[in-house]
Image 1: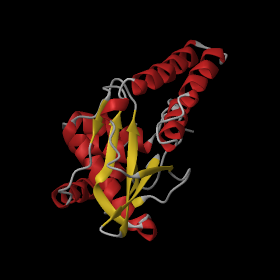
Image 2 (image 1 turned 90 degrees about the horizontal axis):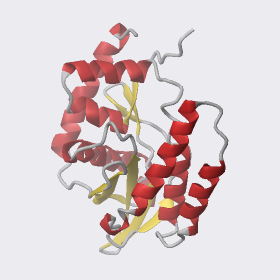
Image 3 (image 1 turned 30 degrees about the vertical axis):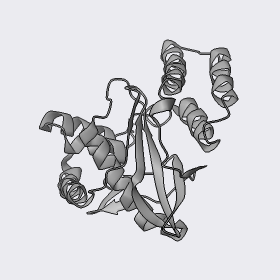
Image 4 (image 1 turned 135 degrees about the horizontal axis):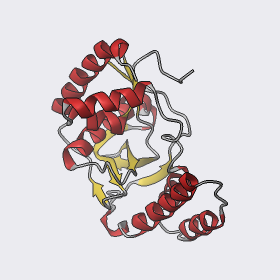
Length: 229
């Protein structure tokens, strides 16, 4: 029996793409969200772990990236799909290494994000946000928090508009689930698109984007029962 999700659930990056896509692409996004392929969540696992650890080191421990690439090169592959996945992870780490000068934490301290995190509930849709990195700083004597979200797929890079929606949802996530560590700081809700080697700074104007996101989630919740493979 094909695995499927009975309740509306989508990742933050896919939701951003949904908002900016045409109907045909929206339908595809929702089908994959309701009937998720097994490989989707694990495809860039090694790259995400290595990049997150490196950023948490304040981007000083380059051995983390070198070691990850060496381990991937030695990893056995039983089939062509696994060979491609390994190559994709190596390529992602190498591309990340070429965009370091683009990344600015605005003086914040990076820390590894939680391995598991609560979802953001928007209009009856569970949105998986989980920043890979949280950013901690002081503003006018008070604690502030933000985060970094990674995006990997080569065939589906994020553009500036989509990254803006991801940033806005990270702001909302920080407001709802990380408020105990500080007030959410919009400019520190950063998106790193690895495939295009683009670092998108956090957006300051989140209200309009959050309204768009709420409308999209209302639509997703209403469509969810009718989605078939």
